[in-house]
Length: 633
Image 1 (spheres, one colour):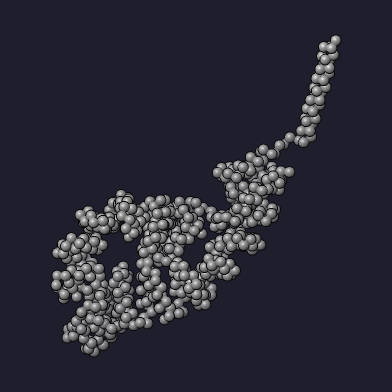
Image 2 (image 1 turned 180 degrees about the vertical axis):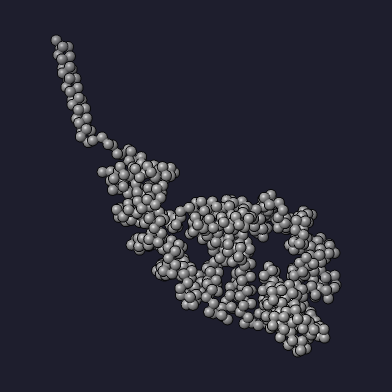
């Protein structure tokens, strides 16, 4: 009697958990605390404190959103932007409202030039975690989109929270300049230079403002000073070249263009006949590690042939190998100015520039290396990496493909290209790249998992299952593949496979109560109530206040008519989590319908009341007859 009345509601609850957005993230103990700690990370300045907090987060919730966020921050610090973006995205898949992950992802999107995506993520970031970094990045996005009021608002918020940030002042100046408020723009550029005197961006912005106001001499004076503090800035040298050109000083203009890396600059023709003795002697000394004596030998050639190229090439290589980077750059640049035909000169120079963060100069050098040798695979790879980091995806893809034509055995680059193609939604090409990875490295779990996700996106469920299973064979702790398989099995109603998968999960993590709870849900849904009760009890044994397991246990007891045990479990669930609404509803149902009074007593009371009513009716009839007879008389 009671069982039928209560079956519908609990069954609907289990079905909803299985077929809706229930979070199947395994190993979630401590994840709430980990998320709270993760939210504090952007504000931590001390490296030791930050490292300890990151380690604590991973310990608390190794497979959760907070741990993915930590992985993203660590990848970002090491320069692995691709890995950082992927980690932040995985964090947001687990916790869509994770504001600091959204903001961090938005900053990387901005660096890549993905303005629309950056705007979405940064807006989420400032809504939940209004840090100055997120406001600053969102202000720059709005500046690029020419939405100047919003740009001013967000940059203003960033400045209010971080008043000494020269980058924010430059952003404000750029907005004012775009709006034609030149005096306010000049004030902000000057403030930025006070805060950071060597700021290349502030100097360039102010110089361009001077040119806009036809104050050419002021711009020239400023840029000349900037060139001293930023001697390798191609932007400064090229802007100087334009000013000298306008002033009629073509020779100086050509020289500045050369310093700026322009290929079409006129240079002094190089002499290609160095004295063999000096070069040979220098090579011999270099092979013995006598760097200074070798350098002296190479320079001896320049005394008689000052325009010769090989001595500078040798000097650059000598210093590069010795780790004397500044001297290597100087020598390589001299070789470059003299139009060296050696591609290694430009490649090594590019590496040195890239190491110093001078990416514009590095790009120019790598391109010149490729011009000298079209099959220079490493130069193409470095160029692709820079293009990708800057958001020029199409150019990056082009260079990666050229690299793979030259070195098709590079499984890691095939994998990187596949991920880029997935981001660009070029799924058929991405599949080809993943298949190339698996031909070269068939036991790569990442490739199997990511290819499975592509097949799943294309509604090719069987192929997706095949690769997810292979990923789990190679890495049993692969949470992402396990979660994806759970979702697919639930959607396809493959409950036998689902039970086996969750049983394996519980065996892999027997001390995690959530694993037993989830297995119980599936048994519950399949009406295997004894197995469900056993799983729920195991979850409660591991975590006495596991509210959902207690609730589910009480629900199964109700469905099987064990009302006293149901009430006990539900009371415990309510105590563990008073906010579980369904628990209160089920408890009220038990209180309304469960009457401990014996049925015989109820019948006895009913029969007595019926006799009283009948007796009263007979007495009333007799009295009425007597009154009627008296009236007739």
